[in-house]
Length: 301
Ligand code: GDP
Ligand code: MG
Image (tube, rainbow, N blue to C red; front, side, top):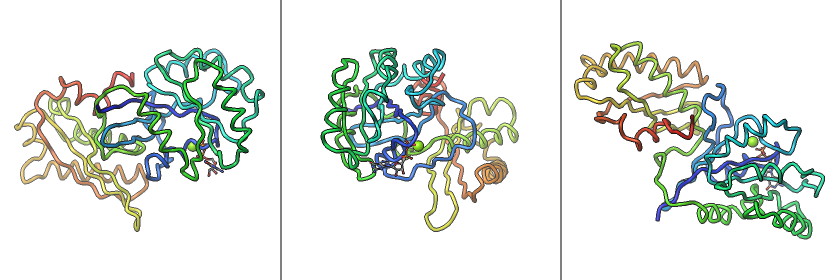
């Protein structure tokens, strides 16, 4: 049975959220996101295995209820957590009971939809005496709303496999939402797609761009040089549209590609090697799987 779902990692700054994500995805995840977020939930990493796909989401703005949070913030965060399957609430070796809870974390958890499982992840166990870990575990486990308390050391990559297994065990059967080669911060890819789309709009007659969508097939930074290799795909609905996008002797597509590359380079501040393919997918706009894959997901509204 293939399982998939959405997981948010939340916790105070510095507890090790990014380190854990890097450990799970197995790649350095670009921490850069120069553009303001447009969608409510930003994808921060996607874990793929033969039998599962776990999409990790960032909670915009607030990373901890364990600060001075007004009702409004609580509500905003709570809503952004409604569509997810699992919340990982991360704390680290500095956590002090009960001072660092201060009746904030537990009430916050209670506001989150019961459909969302909550795991408390105690990170930096390499720095926690075993007795202290036991006390923290006991403290959180007495609350029914908390499904699991698990210790890890993100930096030493200890407990990560257990955590992944626990997540998988708690997900339901589902589809692979994103292609397997997408594993990292999607924001820069989104920027690339947006720019290509904008160039299509500029170079094409009006009725075609609405039937087109752009997605990234390949996005990789070279290790030895500051160059990003990008393969993008434009899909359109008809063969006649494909012909028009490509143009005589490929001239139109060349123009789109050149203009897009120049703007992407300016926008990301790095050299780009861009290849664009055009493909026909009849009626893709009526296909909910295609829509979801392209980010037109009800979850992002
Ligand atoms: P974030 O702000 O929650 O994303 O935290 P980071 O992932 O940036 O980590 C903050 C700091 O904690 C970094 O210096 C990490 O190297 C360190 N760190 C992360 N995980 C561990 C761990 O398991 N053990 C120890 N000792 N340090 C860790
Ligand atoms: Mg971080």
